[in-house]
Image (cartoon, rainbow, N blue to C red; front, top):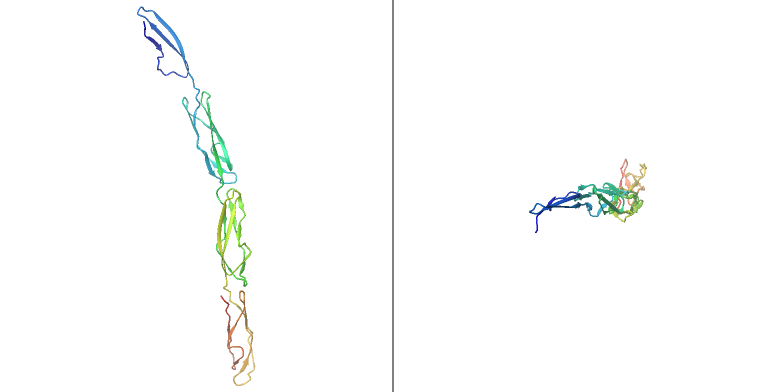
Length: 267
């Protein structure tokens, strides 16, 4: 009837990679023995398992894009950790836009795993505006003063970009405070806006035009009636009235009299 069979290696053993011959024997109570064999072939046809980052998005740091680093690993059931090769490599400079990174890993049996992810380099940073501090200028006429200034802008990707300001440099600014608003845009459509103030003041007094020192002959015991002309002109207000003491047309006594004149503008 049924007799036991002994096999080497036994069923349930761990078989190594490659071909292993299993030899089996069975004997009956009369001592008759039968022998046979078969082979067990253990193969490695499974590629490594890749662990890649999710799709990445990074901000451009210059006109060439951005340096992007990432980590990609691979593990093989037989060989354990195996090296991964990616193109472009981690630490490369990625250009603006979407770049596909392709990675591969192979085990000693020649099984290869391939995977990919994307790196998107974007430009969402507006230019950097360099505006003057708030300015104060003296009025040079009734309309105020012509004021010039310098406003520049630099973009991480595009470099120097033009700046538009309102009112423009070289405009005539009226008396008082005017806010100048400036903006600059890069080719990606990012816009920076800033402002400063220009204050035009009138702190210059009028210019007096007085006669030279006068000498007149007495016409009576009280002295003499003396007339003179005193005028004043202001850069902003134009001609302004002059008040003198003693006034023109007064009777001046014998001797020296000092005439004091003053003129004020609307400021």
